[in-house]
Length: 442
Image 1 (tube, rainbow, N blue to C red):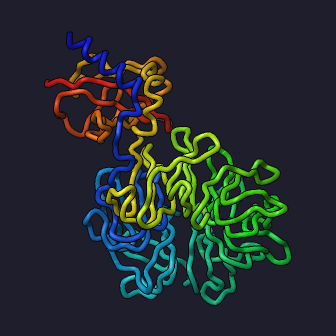
Image 2 (image 1 turned 90 degrees about the vertical axis):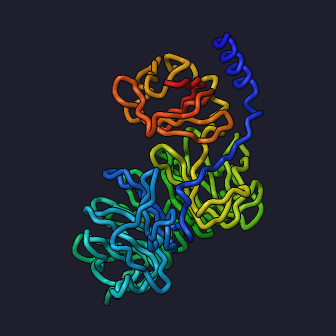
């Protein structure tokens, strides 16, 4: 009788997923008490670094830089305060050291301006002081690149883009005539997005390609600023507050086909700018200043659906441990309180795929206990060891996390939950798989 009851519940849920109402975004350890401007995932330590203008993270003192391990917030370094105004815009790891950049004229009592490195014991000047803000950092062909609104580094004139070779900062070609806001590496070239329109005598409107020798334009470029450049699934995207013009039909977001920029669907209303985009679990997300739909959006065919109203603003996405995070400077999303960082309750996005994913794996025995839970997989290549496993309640609240170990066993953070029906979610290779299980007492 119990087995028949379980099957009936499963059938009803699969056929009526729209009846599930749940919070779309989840808290990230209490978030931070200010704005987040940038992030970096260290592939060696598997830690997420966030930087901005804040002084605590999850209640832990953290001056403008903090570290998240998916469970806890930690401060970084000696927790010295970046001052006047004390904003960090970008963070990266280069030659084993954490590098931060932004707009500051001192760290603690040290006169370090706008860029610094952590040597393992204290913050140090990286070569020389920049005269104004640094917005972006990137590693290309073994060298560190910095982009921003600066014009001089130490006594050298180096306009808006600079290269660190391990010993000193040098000019990059003829430089650029205005600010660089974003970098990415695409097909062995460094892509720059920003406010600039030329390099020397060459016209390069708002987006440029650098091949370690010279700058080149990418198609017709854009007539308004490009805030972000990103490579998503081997395709180059540009985002900003640009509008269509005779040489380029794109508004706010565009993708490069190797020859020209291609128009894409875009949200409308408000200030009409897109600040970032991301592809996660085969869905396309954007974030920016727009009202139709508001603030956060997911592409559904040729139109966007809302993922929530923000009090404040969100500026970027990042994928950390196979979970999607949205960062910025906001208090709440859809009336739920967050501290400038939240992660997607992906159960809501993937729920329509539940029926299909049930064929990929099953849990046995079922009913089961957390200690005795095993996975049978129809295609072993779909799911890897150390894949993230999450247990959700029937109203889609996250209850428990774990990971897959050898022999398809699950290692949990704890070994007890209230007996009942749950969703089991596995995230592997940025794909999601679901099943419904019944947990019983040991």
